[in-house]
Structures are given as structure tokens and as C-alpha cells.
Image (cartoon, rainbow over the protein chains, first blue to last red):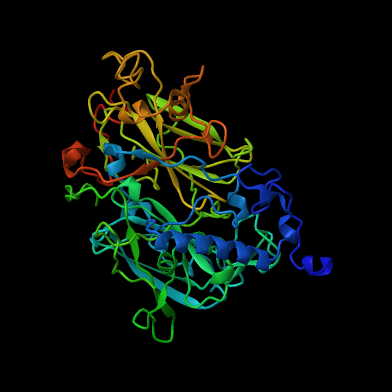
Length: 292
Length: 239
């Protein structure tokens, strides 16, 4: 890698901008002082592999399966100073934590589930429909709850003012959507397939194409923000964020499937992605409907 | 693959994993007045604010803080309107941090949902560099006991409300302090969040709750209609 090659991604962003590397490292991560731009994908991939090997070894020795991402995961450099060092403290959920905010039709505009109609013209890119069902750990639908999505455009560019990636902004695409799940827990929205996105975690770092999701369950302990990915992405193995989930089966749960039944004739291809919200598992009795 | 089958040890479907909120949620997640649970001038309105810091003590300018709380009477609110923000108190809000790591909410002080329990805001934290959301609690500080004359002032449990709380009682004093808001001279509540290092905030994991711990009749199920009529004595509207 030469310095000239390194200029392929302009580094005009001051150090306070997203995904720069902290200038000082916590004592728990002595190797964090390396200059990120000088770190190669090979080095990151080796770190990822070492982490996963340790996890597999633990499983073999009877350690429990991990369903979520690892908070203390050095390959994602921005996390070095932003993960708790103490174990999460057990708490019995109190009443307020066993409920979640209520969202209703009056909170959501009719067109917010269509990310392709928010401007005067058609956005450029591959039109897709994403559909799935939100359920709790017992498989029961999570009804009438808010789903928020946001994403880059087809060129891998976010509208966010701090996105410096020199790819075109699409004047007809913002990349933000909102919807409620229906009475059976289904959500569906229409959008443009996002492109992969370069970032500054290390040299020549690329994020697989993804859509950010934010969901509320029936209780705040089910609150989740996550990312949905597309099947067969060659960038999966290289991505420290996706690979922060140590368990291979858990990683698969973030990948949508192409679903021909969701595709629409001469209009859009379709993807199916179901979501399981698992919280403190209160035995749920449906309250009086307090919303429209 | 989005298989709905699973083999979670507890017989539940395996949960969808979380992922970081990333650096670019600012154009999508915060919305107009998302951090204003009540309008300026609402009786009993309080400002809850603080700074989010990382392991080096530096401000975190790209974090997102959400609160979820009972109303001043200790009732769980089940009303829509958190995004519409038409004056309905919904108990939920969202704030992004600014360049100096600061966030703020305008809200009402939560009441205790059960007698003898210390009231708190349930807080969820997201940030670039944070792989998964973190849960914590921001308890009201100890203070003079609430009086009937002024139900929105003071603390329902009097001078030492916090010693009786099971979570706080389970923590060393130094750790416990990270969960308690401080009353500022201007009456506001300050709750700083330290993601890592010295004074690291206590973050929570919730486990199975006994099924009989909660009954749904604690939820206020006021009919919500498009012509909002605030119930007297609630939302500070008739107090």
C-alpha cells in the first residue's frame, strides 16, 4: 500500500468526525494506539478471526451461546473508549420497564413507509420492498409498534451532513422511513437498495450494504437498534461491525432473504426479514386498547 | 437467513442481535421536539440534562439518549403522540448529544409506580462505537418529602428514598451515585453518563421477571381521541 493509494479516500475530516480513531487508548487495549489509516484489512481480519476462534473454543468448553454483539470488540476501533468495562448489572425490571411507549397512526405520515416518494422525482437505484414479521421470544406478534429505518442511497452516500464520502447525493432520496407493525406484527416498506459504504476504521475499509432498523417491543427491555444486510454480500467477512457478533448463527439472523413472493411484477424485487424481540419476557395480557 | 425456529436454551426464539447506531443517525432518529415531552411553561416541567463522556473523559458528540417514564402520579402512560407532540404527555423522549456531548429533555418528574419504590427515568443509550444499546436508570435525588400541597415537588419517600430501592441497595455507594440525578440550583436534574472508566455509569441487564409482578391495571388507559382532553390532575394540567 502506498501513500498515493491511501489518498483514494480523502481524509479531510478533522479528528472529531465520525469513525476517526481515539487519540488515547484505554489500558485494556494496548494495541489501540496504532494509526488506523495504516492498518490493513489483513490485520483486522486476523483480529476478527482470533476473536471468533476464542468464542468457538469457549462454546466447546461449555460457555453459553452469545446472541448479541460483543461490546468489548477492538476490531471496531470507535468502540475502544465507548464500551463499559464493568459487567452489566442485573436488575429485576420494574413496572415502567415492563411497558413501552405507544405509537399510533397519528404519529406516522401515510407516505413514510415509502422512501422512494419523499421528493419530486424518482430516486436512482434498484427499487426494493422489504417485508417481515416482528415477534417476541415466544413467537407472538408484536402489534402496532414503531419501526424506524434509515440508510445510504444507491451510491453508498448518506444525506447526513458529516458524510464526506465523495459519492453522489440523490436529490430524490433522503433514506428515512417510519411505519407501524400491523395486527399480526408485519411491517413493510419500499426503498432503494443501499450501496456499500467506505469508512475510516482501517485502510480500505468498506461496510456491507445495510439498512439501519430501530424497533420498540411491548416492553422497553426489548428496545433494539440493529442493521439488516443483504444475502451473499462479499464484504461480510471483512466487516468488524457485522463480525462483532461472535456467533455465526446469530450473524445470519441479520441477513434478509430474497423472497419472490415479496417481489412485485415489473416494479420491485423483494426481501424478507423477520425480527425477534427478546426482553424480560413479561407474561403478556393484552390491555384495553388505549389507542386508535 | 431469517429463520424463526430456534434452540435458545430457555425455549424462546433466539433474539435478533443488535448493531451499532453508527455515525449517521442524526438525520433520521431525532425529530422536531423529540426531546420535549412537555411544552414550555407546563406546571411541574423539569429539565433533565447531562453530558455523555467516553473512557478518556471526552464528550461523546454522536450519542442518542432516550427516556421512558411514568407520569407524576406514578401511572404508566399508554398514549400515542410521541412523534406528533401535540401536547399529549406520552412518557417517552429522544435526544441526540451536541458537539459538547450534552443532551436535554423537558419533561415531568416521574412518580413511583409502587408505594415505597424510588421513582426513576428508564434511560437507553446509543452511540457510534457502541455495539448495542445500554440500559440504565436515572433516579430522582433524595429531597424533602412530597406534600399534598405541592405534589410535584420533593420526593415521595422523603429524606432517604434511595436506600429502600432494591437496585440501589445492591450497589456500592460509589457505583450507586452514578444512577442518581443531581438537583441543580436552577431546579433542573442533571444526569451525566460515563460510558467507560472513572465513574463509569452502572448499565443494566434485565432478566426474567416473575409473571405476577405486574398487573396491567397500573396502566392508565385513557381513551385517546383526536380531540385531546387532558385528564384533570395528570400531565400537570389540572394539578
